[in-house]
Length: 120
Image 1 (cartoon, one colour):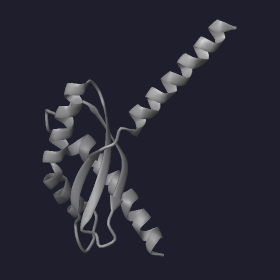
Image 2 (image 1 turned 90 degrees about the vertical axis):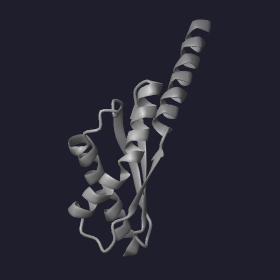
Image 3 (image 1 turned 90 degrees about the horizontal axis):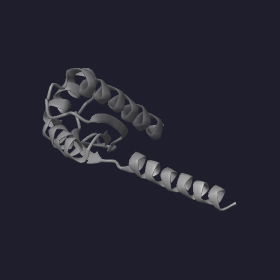
């Protein structure tokens, strides 16, 4: 039963954080496209690790990531007002490069396919 509840809390956090970042966060440093890939809230509801994936050039990714880290207090306050829990977790923002890595692997596979077709 506890796993079901933690899964619901994680998904609700992910949905609300996406909405806040997209609609309410007015930081001009956020120029890259932000995608929340996963949220993991601890069982005691003290911490929430938020994994974000950023799309854009390296400079805009770096600036956007710093802006997101700096806005974690605002995000926590907004989450506290939107989701009614005993504790509002401290938000820890981590970079998730899995999508970029997958795209890189996919491009390598496509190159090998092209090379194989050229050799035949």
